[in-house]
Structures are given as C-alpha cells and as structure tokens.
Image (cartoon, rainbow, N blue to C red; front, top):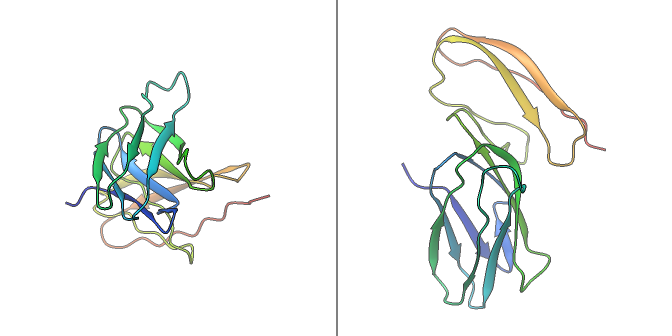
Length: 147
C-alpha cells in the first residue's frame, strides 16, 4: 500500500485535505524547483507533535506522522503564505476525503452496525448517520452545511 502523499506543485499543496491513520507515514514531497517550508500546527493538547522543516531540492521527500486522532491539522509553507493544506488523523482505517463531486469510498468495512460521520473544515455541524454493513456495497448520502 502506497504511503499517502502531500505534494507541493506550482506553489500549492496537493491535496488540500488528506486523511490518514494515526502513526501512518505521510510522504511530503517538493515537486517545485523552489524552496518550500513545511510547518504543521496540531492543537496544543492533542498529543501530536508539530514539525517545521525546509525542502530546498526538487523531488525531496520527507516522511512524517501524527500519533493521535485529530481533525484538520493545518500545514503551511512559511515561504509562500498562501500554501495551506489540512491533514485529518483517525484512530481507525475507515476514513476518506470526498472527491470534488462529493463522492467517497470506504473499503473493506466488515459487517456490522456503525455511525458514519461527515465533517467539513468550514462546516459548523458534524453529520452522523447510523448504518449497517451486511456485505457488499452500501450507498449512503450525507450532506454537511457549509456557511
């Protein structure tokens, strides 16, 4: 399984939002021919350690991880202040970031009853829905209000 990638392309982070499991290594790559700085801002009492390092060389890859579940850890480039991304960390493997069209897929969810949770970085509400997985695909629609 490939490690998640947070890339710097055209002085922008890609993807804008990334979801990972706690202690899962994230590859952070500079695909630009310019200096970038990768600076994370976990919440002070989250149990996660921040990092702040430069990436000077095109193609440079560093690996980092976060120990604890935490939503929307801000990552920015101190050299280019418009470069911002977010990493959400989960203590389980069943998480996803929606595609531009709002679709998502959770793979290999074992049969059982679950609470499906959706949250948007700018949303003021967290949407929860009880679901049951019996085997095969389950289609669930959720909507999160963004103000």
